[in-house]
Image 1 (cartoon, rainbow, N blue to C red):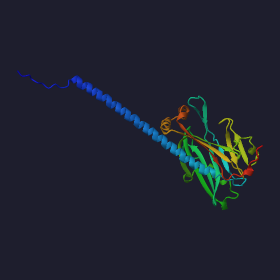
Image 2 (tube, rainbow, N blue to C red):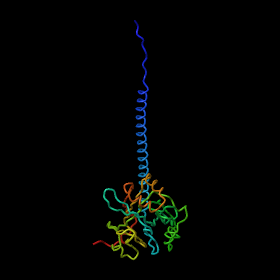
Image 3 (cartoon, rainbow, N blue to C red):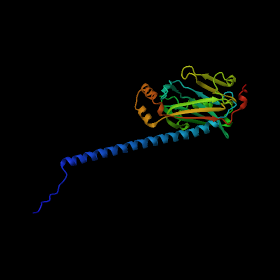
Image 4 (cartoon, helix red, strand yellow):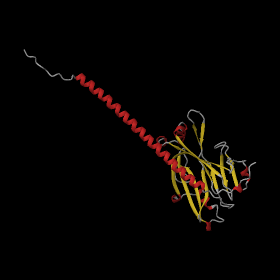
Length: 288
């Protein structure tokens, strides 16, 4: 007597269970792949941001080290001012302390062989010097050159060119997503120069402390003749690209400020203190 052998296949329920398991596995792999891609893009964006910040820091160091007194009463050796705008307040993560972000317009003179170079930095939402300012802007660099033969008696002209700058050939973009561009000046002993410090008694120095825009900070620096800061401390804050993209989608400046206030943790800060090579020590009185 022989047995009939029959081939036994998968039932419909077994096939459906296998397909469901495969679907779960594929979905998990795709989610893991998506997260890996997202982390890679974020890491690359942060690397680019840090690299851009380091390159800009090198540029700042090269420029600020060369600050040179013009020895002209009407010359502007160094200028820094908080323009008329509303600084942004950001809540520092974990501390609940408010941080005031400051934009400053900065200008100074530097000597390069037979030319005086007027160099300036400012943050705007468009290249125009008189452009509007939002909580986040682009940092621009200005430069003009004057031959030494045409400079004597005209030391104020490079600064006027900076204030009235509209020529694109004199302006170059440095950084996007800037939320802070702030300088502080120090004397030869490393003391912060404010209104009331010994150097402020010099007739070629004008300093105004801020009362409303940024209380506790300096609102205006002006140095002329033989006076220039001995050290300049520069602080630049740059918003992460992904957060900057989200901020740009908000049409209202008030909405942008409110959004930015809670994203202090997404700002990369770059700070350095730069020694000025050509400072005149006689411009500073001896400290007691």
